[in-house]
Length: 313
Image 1 (cartoon, one colour):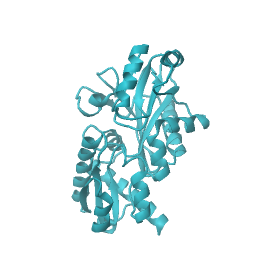
Image 2 (cartoon, one colour):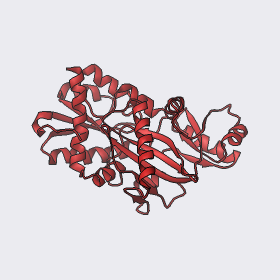
Image 3 (cartoon, helix red, strand yellow):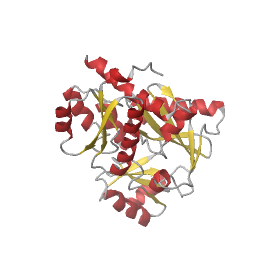
Image 4 (cartoon, helix red, strand yellow):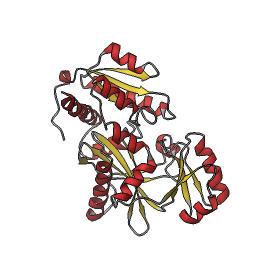
């Protein structure tokens, strides 16, 4: 882990949260938790609920750095990161390109495939798609908005009618929609802090799959941390997750979601570059298993902004 500065040396920190994406409410909860943590650690921090005046607010307040807790569009997709680069304002998490690539599930997969990293087979869906051909190719599948997170707009399909209905539902959230082969098996998530891979978590949902309700609402979802994997399998999934994270150019922190099929093989799903920090969130759970409580984790993430500061300096 990075050697931290004194709280005062970080200066004034703007915790950016909320925004206008479909993940706004989760972002507000995450941002509030981070803000309260920074204040407990004696960091001079304040919150900003991001709207169309965000950049003006930042220019007027002149913070020393930004802790980005925006999830989804306009906050996690490289747009805000690019604006902050222009302002010369250090920020937490991944840079412009990595944020944009990770948000784009299709291009993430194309890059991983090119590098020989295992990821579930997929197809892009649109109004003129041959849905029969997609189902014949993929079999039972998940349908997802390409540029959304938190399982928003996701659906399952085992028939052509279900596939078309799931596409219509996902299209309400995003003009770009994909179908991904349904890997029946166990679901894991691997958190990365800087270049350190944290303990693996296995997710056991009471729902048919790990959907929005299972992530943020249900108390029936079970989390196993560290995941009950052999040492060999633990090393394998951690190496795969770190390779996926590095392939996209991620930095600071992130979370890699992975499936394991019945044969024991691992398959990459996606990388989150600004994961949730709520009471149900996975990065804090994994960090705690590695000996980092919530406040220590938040300070480590904050410190990731110092690398960008050094680059600009």
